[in-house]
Length: 328
Image 1: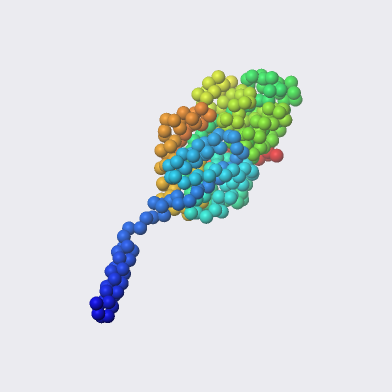
Image 2: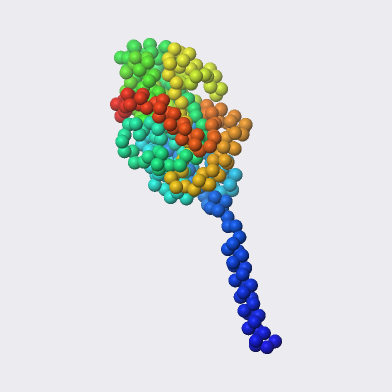
């Protein structure tokens, strides 16, 4: 072969290679959402381990790990009645690898109490999905020896008509449920706030406090439950009456939802929402959640927004009236 032929061959190969690159550039490229997740995903849980939220998000994380074949890691950052974990994720990169699961308290109630809590639930976050809801429960210390609301009222009357009552934290549904309950009973409360239901129940069993109003869940099952703050009895605790059965018109429920930092790609949020929603609708999931008193919700992201708006309307006036004066 002549030198001229060799030069032509090299040039031809360069032309073919360049053309191939051009065709590849024109070919459809996978979107970030299609490739997501390409690494581990972290979900920050904002209250103490052992409660309903902790149970639910760990079940969801395990299911998502299996669905996407990537680790979904649950990281607990309790404190500030849920604010510590929420603030951490508010400042995280909106890349689809940081999420937070929290409750009605930090996202709806707390802004009514403080002008600046360090984040804006609407402007700093993208809703992903409502996991579900559970009623709060009235639990009493064993040392009281009471079995129902009437006996609780009688005990209080014989002990200065004042109770040390534990709540899951300032600005939580548990706090306002307790405030409304004692208001209805005419009992003065010394409110003590915890980082969630688990440490509350530990102090209740130890006799450091006399009453509590946490969300129903695994951590409260060892406590003496006097009443459920729902419209009807729970399948998980059918022997426990509702407050309405005891003549107390107080209904409280705590929901949990997943959020992403504002700016997280909508396609990633939609992808995660669809996967979690499918998991929540499974009969096995509904049974497992029902066993701990949690009703799965699911639905599109805008259901979270609608729920927040509804609760602001329902609870806003009550929270403004009660404020945080019963907290310490």
